[in-house]
Length: 84
Image 1 (cartoon, rainbow, N blue to C red):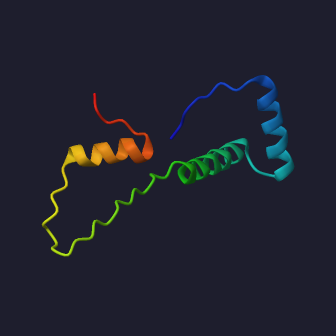
Image 2: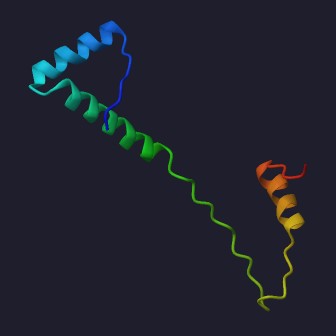
């Protein structure tokens, strides 16, 4: 895809010089730089996996856990207030 970008003059000159030293086009240099940036961003922004505690019971299904109970525990244990 063709696009236009505005680069500061000193950044353009540095990129042009580096592409020349590496024997690649400016387009190739910029494409590789953007690819590296996107790869590192993907690693940094992975969604955090949340694990819920297992509630053991001698009679499974006999413990009624409500949303309010969970909210109270989160507030008490983690300092996370969910009430509006």
